[in-house]
Image (cartoon, rainbow, N blue to C red; front, side, top):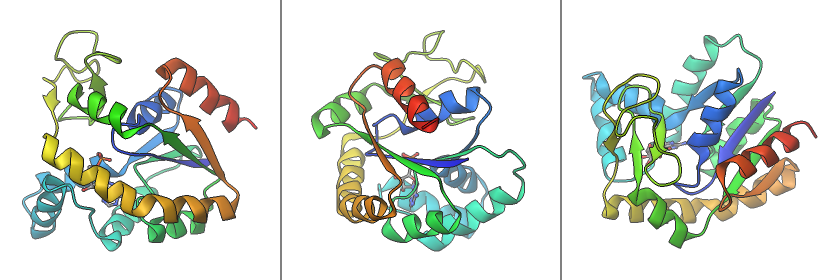
Length: 204
Ligand code: AMP
């Protein structure tokens, strides 16, 4: 099965993708693929870094090429795309990959701003934590890599990312509704409840 998780930044996409990964799914997190690319000292890496650092979207062509490269190595049948589609063109691309279900995690802007303030990320594996709602076992340290966690973005970039999300969301959602494979989750509830609903919908 192939699924995708969409929603505004801070809606919990990464968290649910990580929970699926723990159950044997292959997680493809677009943000992580891009961050990996920025670590290479190439002109593409530098271009991507500039876009990420200003909260802008990376061109579709780059995203598709990274995904196609990634898919070549995957033998696992269950794949979760985290952080995609972010544009209508990406939604069409996923549709061509025969995506089974897309989950929209709905969270209000007010809640998101609150959450992102407490978000921490592992610079090595990309796993995200929240000091209030989803803390690491040891304060400031990644449960898996034991790497020191970092705060990711400032207020200005968060606002820019939210604006970017809003700009594309309606078109993507109406396209997915027509495709009849969109499922909506209320992402303001505790992680366990949202994930339990997600799992029920997966088996439907
Ligand atoms: P994320 O880790 O999902 O919050 O993404 C971090 C940044 O990577 C975003 O602000 C964008 O600049 C870029 N990015 C992630 N996913 C995509 C995507 N599907 N399309 C274009 N840019 C993306």
